[in-house]
Image 1 (cartoon, rainbow, N blue to C red):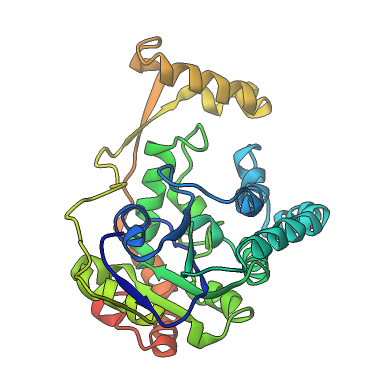
Image 2 (image 1 turned 135 degrees about the vertical axis):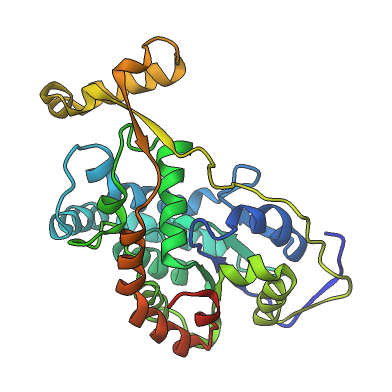
Length: 328
């Protein structure tokens, strides 16, 4: 660490996301300048094995979507999730206790950074916040983003970067449309309520990603002020875009995806798609459907309207300039 930093308190802090809010940049270029004791799920850093619960709880919540072809009702998925968590929760607590004890004699603050600490559901956030509190974390950094931009960026990542579902999933299914709200929770107040049920409001920093885009220095100052640190030298902010959204807007969907056989045997479809992705010229284009990864304006307008009042509330709760960034 090149800058000499003075800390007002020696404590444990967690940066919990959201996804698609500059986390990769912060994890690689900013946080290493602020913390000597630093853990991240970014591939360039280490993550404590005692906190690996975050990978499992997120998998528990979404595996009904990822592993099956049906999208189950929230009530069914909640029941499935709670059953799995109840079986593992005491094990998670023991591991978290070991982490807390192993980091009880810190000489500098500790930072944990992972979007998985929040997840994209109230259930996973609730579980994670309780375990984070038990791990000794006292402060939370939560970066939000305008819902319409967040959803479009994450949809592209799921389909084009990760091919997470090994098939085309419409935007409206995941993030909502005219008749449904989607399976991903986009009301940031709900996550904040979960955070505040475990942490004091003065120890929670909510900051919009749009501030980082507009002025990285102001964004970093907001974090530094919240953390109560003073730095002798200016933080080096590199002009680097990490984990950018895909510019390509076409997804090659197998026409066979819609066949009764593929619906009945989803693992066969997933294995076939994995093979074809690794052998791109094996089948001609006539076996694929070209799906546009663009969202219609009327769907964007619906999402804006759906979260307008909720964003107004969020702005007043944390004195944020969300109207300036067109949250409403």
